Length: 279
Image 1 (cartoon, rainbow, N blue to C red):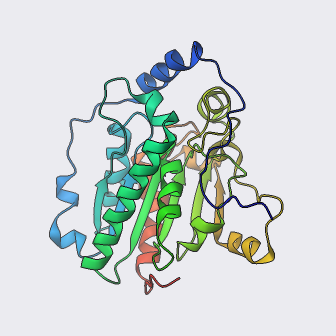
Image 2: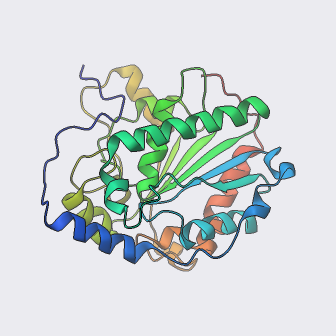
């Protein structure tokens, strides 16, 4: 059986060195929104003692989209700690590095895994959720993969994730109690079909992303590994979501109304259940 348990990047299928830098700068410019607001009130000691939700931005870095996700959760009744973990490079115009620097991203995933374990040691038995948007969805998977065997999170929520659809999720699923929830939309053509075909996904494979076509079970998995996929929950965009500010576009998943209606109840339901970090 061919092992695919980690995000070891295969050779790229496509490269256009002249187009890629300009294209990534355009993508970052389109994604970046004002981030003058603050969510410091969502990370107080009282809230942190109730659980933790970590939001991972896309390759644009900390932006208004991330804040909208955080505020949508708060408005939807999530009273646990909510924080944005900006894994991106602080260099101006660093979107290309954020997407393509696999080694740096892996190191950032390891740092986040340590941050989560520190929280779990301080607040044992509390729920921990990770929400990754776009490139942040890839970082969520990398973080799960770097956790040791004796650790797990409540769940990972992927919004328009820039991850290859046949990426092996076996190890990631084992590191969750309730699984991975992949929210995807076939309408996300520009970013997650054309864009990831040109510039690649976070796992450095080129082609449509799971955030646009959904995940598939890789060929050659053992029966035990295939059983883990029962914890993969794939939620395709529907017309009903448009009435909550999500038209199925790449950034539509960050709508506060959508987050309040769909994501907050999911997290609240899981937080009401007993949490165990034993695999």
